[in-house]
Image (tube, rainbow, N blue to C red; front, side):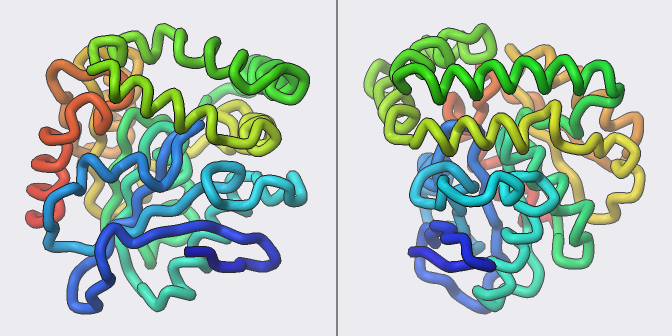
Length: 272
């Protein structure tokens, strides 16, 4: 399904028919993913609605729009209006990687709408301007690469990043599905996403962590030491934050251990 938000088409789907008497969990995929990314986690019947959205430049959502629509604050404003238009007044957010950064920005911008926040392998951004500047330059180089080279070349490079090394343990069929999803994207949309809503461009939300009042969970994989340490640092700023480190998983926890993530998310939502 698609909905036009201030002139931009966003694609979304309910994993099952919406029931007004159940709470709603909004799920946000990572870079090169789509709204189908979380389907393995929520394959079984759930006691809550699951609303999955294609982020701008991904899946069925628009790619060729004004670049400033990709900026993090503008994007979460669009997303919040999208959910409002679906007459869901209050909801939980669950985002992975880029989607986790987006979910955090959404929570900071619209705290009264958010009943709880789950970040999987996510970061509040980079604290120093020098670090952001370096990351912006790296993201911009990747964006240019996407525009100038065939998409398959970028996908070949992206899937070989050390961050995703643990995915090579997955069955070949699943690896091929992930690759096919990446190849289904539009290079322009991915480039704009890197350029305007990448980690180096987005604001740092470290200073906002202490102000978050809703229940807050961070999921990491035991093999993803970088993001586990980020989670521990986040916990120093927000002691109420809970961390779950999932065994035998790397950066993309929900892909590598969907059954474990399903159980943890169900338990957390039930408790809150």
